[in-house]
Amino acid sequence: MRQIVLDTETTGLEPEQGHRIIEIGCVELLDRRLTGNNFHQYLQPDREIDAGAVEVHGITSEFLSDKPRFADICDDFLGYVRGAELIIHNAPFDVGFLNHELARVAGVAMTVGDLCEVTDTLALARRMHPGQRNSLDALCKRYAIDNTQRELHGALLDAEILADVYLAMTGGQTAFVLESSQVDAQGGQVAAIRRLPVERPRLKVVHATDDELQRHARRLQAIAAGGRCLWQEQEVRDPGVETDG
Image (cartoon, rainbow, N blue to C red; front, side):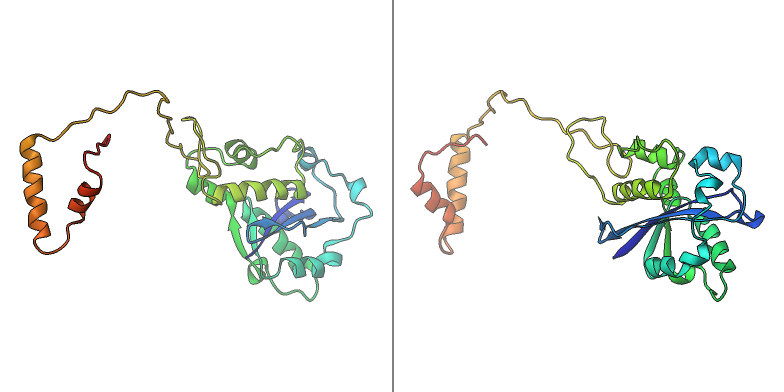
């Protein structure tokens, strides 16, 4: 099973307003294991970047001035993601921008949906944790994923973090815990596991009465009438053995 965890950074919020992708970051998972076969590319958008967007990701027009355009890397990108399941947080945003970029490339008449299945981890998180915050930072806190390097958004860094979050979200309970305050990988409370005291009172032994022993013997004899009775043989081998029940 090949999955690609993907994130993008853009010049603004709306591709319909001419905003463009300026960074693509992808992390490959094979059978839920990171392979290190990542895809990362900065892109020249041929337009100014909104000031609000720069505050989010820190990428400037000057930095992108010598970077390739999407059309230049389109074939490499499509070859990398083709046939994989894309794992994206708030997938409509990134897929919308990718489809906008594909539509601008001459000779490319396809969308992301034509190439890949898409899983939206934001929609998944909302189903698993209704009524809670489900941003990537909130999920990192919920699943104890280290995101201390995420001072600014970055496509490759965010894809790497999302890969860890996705594996935690979909992998079941990831640790055997002994504290009642822990949460499992689905975000629910894990039932407390309490250790019994090492020194505990000896269990009370209730012995059978003479009448009960006699009725037990008669029952065994009735069983043995049709053949061997293993209970009688055991009592002959181990007479007078007592147990703690």
